[in-house]
Length: 397
Image (cartoon, rainbow, N blue to C red; front, side):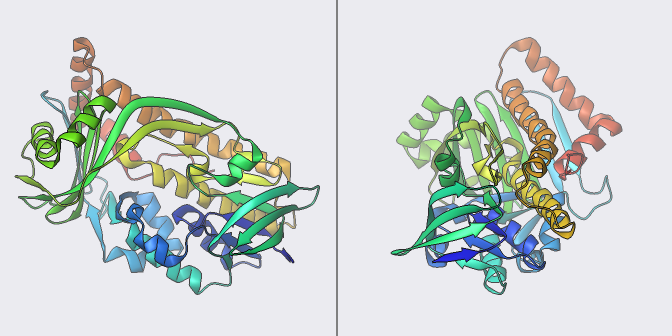
């Protein structure tokens, strides 16, 4: 059995599903391969993670008609507080400065997943779920993809395949695309805490000698915690139990939000900077975590992946209107070049933050604290940082 479509998206997560929605109102035949059925996804622990949505990302979700279902269960970020543990440097960003309602929002991934699944269920998109890709065979005009759904193999003939199937991408593996990997030798401890005081719509980024500590407001008295530690230190804290974890967390963060109490069991994730060596292949393009995985400092990962999807959707629709081949090598190369600058900028920004603020060399500590003070007091510098926090000032095309 062979099915002919225009674009086959492999990966029904937030990035792949958003791309499918962006394309579904046009006269394009879209297929979506999803590894997990809706009940399995709903039960997955990954749905508990908090997503920091930049203002630019919120605008994209509005364009996809997803935001009305998400907004009521999100927390607006109206303030961002950046500090360096044990030092004087601080920078405070406010939504009032650029005259916006919020710099961004925080939402639990499960809320967005539910809204996305509902919109996909109402769409004409052909979904293969649960299913997985077994093989790919690119020809001069189309690419044949063998998709296994249950016990049945289906051959999908497409003009383009989009790999949005995450960090362990099957598509990338089948194509033999290697990855450049930099191990930070750090672990992110992720959990939720109850706060003694109202979060006041404030996101905190606090740099400690072991790495950055972020508290993102989920509810008035609840925050998501992403705490970066050296790998050995993180393993020690996790092994010693929740009481030791909270003692160390209170020491690192202080009492900006009153006393902190644990709301969820902590989980540790090793941190690495990973980039696929190629963004495009014969009639295949990689987006989201299939292409790049970055350090969670500043919460840029999902926003970067959604920009991949937005730019690709815009270019595919233009290519289709012009009657051109959606899998044309020159077209895909142009897309890759268009995304390259944004990717490099975000990697330099996040990687630089990790290196500068994890360094205890006294002259560098003094310089970075002076820089935080300067950012707080110099309006042009603060405006630039605020635009970056909102997801603007990045390259979309």
